[in-house]
Length: 278
Image 1 (cartoon, rainbow, N blue to C red):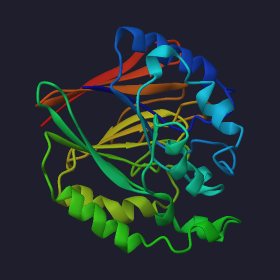
Image 2: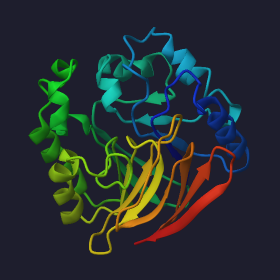
Image 3: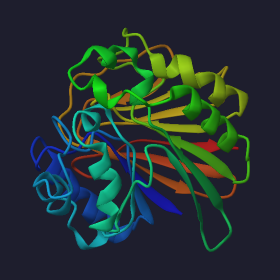
């Protein structure tokens, strides 16, 4: 089972988005993904205003139009998506079934012909960041019950019914990037669940770079893939294994006892690779 992870991409093809999409399609010809995960901030700057918003074409349909990218996309919400219509992103599956976001947070399972089973847990992380409640679109957050979401996450993590349980959300729990010194409400709220249930992988975006972080004292490998278009300078912290400020994405290949991870640049070069074992 093979899948790509790309985040922070929706810029009308600009700032490297179009070029990266061509690179992804070229790689997909040789190493086809079964599906693609989006780590949020799907449309800049202010989301979409409906299912007929022209950005659906200029940032998605006309960009990821390569013949080898016509696979299911499973999508998380980012903070910029909250500035527009979340409901439109939930509804767009009815326009194009390739786009999958059945709820603000949800889970799905994929099993390959050999029996390797992955459970994906897609989180809605924006409501956990308190700083957003002072912004102009904070009314979009009202009514989002973070306690209810945490209880749901706990119940899904408890299933332990797959070879690997992989979480996907927009905001990273750890970063050496531009936001390294900022308060992290997502980590405060969710890391206890990741640790209790020994979740092996968390995929995120938000930082406009590529990162791999792993605390040796904790179970979770943190992969940041927020370089789907515009990037900014990154950095390192004491648990950083890799970081680079370059437009790119991440590819994972799943086996019964391991996940092979490769970070790709906009040029199609492998710039970091690793293996996560059970």
